Image (cartoon, rainbow, N blue to C red; front, top):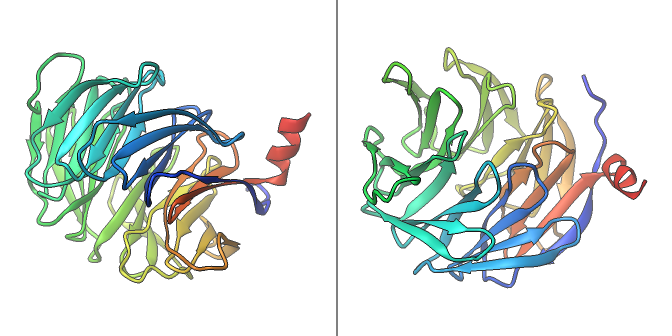
Length: 308
């Protein structure tokens, strides 16, 4: 088991885009994205805090974004009911995809970034073939009974978490749907790097670790405060530590196996909900969103390695 090193604040970035709705790393963690209530997405260097590009074209708040596997495209979701596929270098929207009957809450790419998967307030999960000029979804899944809060995917499966308290697994190879009932509204879902487990953030201030194969509950992580906010969770690159935001200006790092709190990270003394976060795909580094700011945290070891 890797020894735990405490996380320290590295950079604070005032995103200047109203409330920051989501923060995300690109595929290798060299860049990050912030989604704003000002209807824009911003691309940043998380180490220097330098703004690299702004993407404007949505008509309402941007709720989620994801970078493609080669970092040359971005897909974003918005409350304007649309998904936009962006060219990273030009900043121009390549395609606008409409099909959801309500605001779009979450979006992700499949492994080779040929398909975008979105989930919305209309309880639907939609798959979009973005390499063709086809503007309607190639597949629509409407099994959920409440808002879709997260879509995630790997080579063979699509996972959809919903406020109806279920994680639905769509097995792409055999065309099967499995529904695992957690029993509490799920506000966020993250996969472990080994793709064996799912980390589910729930509205009752508990993060749950679920087995991907059986859907069974493996562990519960308690200590943070959710207060009915939609708070995100994640897993660090070493697959050994789970992290979650909270409603009172803190973030919590838990030991995956022992379920104990390893660190309570004070993001701000002024409170504020730490609702969105992202874990670096390779390093011990994290992004947090609170109000209009994005915070970059890493361990001292990572900082020393960068300075060498």
